[in-house]
View: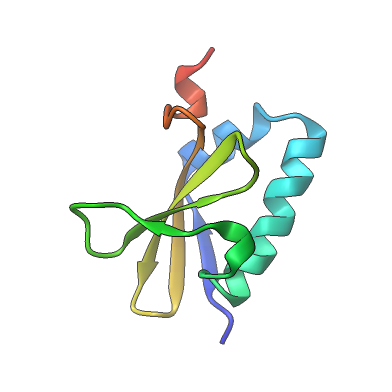
Length: 91
């Protein structure tokens, strides 16, 4: 089953701050995420204290926070660096 991906404004702003290579990596991972959110290459982990909130890895430096809703939608909140800081906070 393919999930519908919904991205937030914060995600879009953070995506623009990445290099072109990193943006391509994000795009590739989103395709995988859409078809299988628990694919091993994503290293998806549940975030403690939240029922449907997860994080997955784009590469060793970039993390995506995602919310899986009703097994139909994946809402992507933020891109983070490996320290878990939103890329919008790293200017």
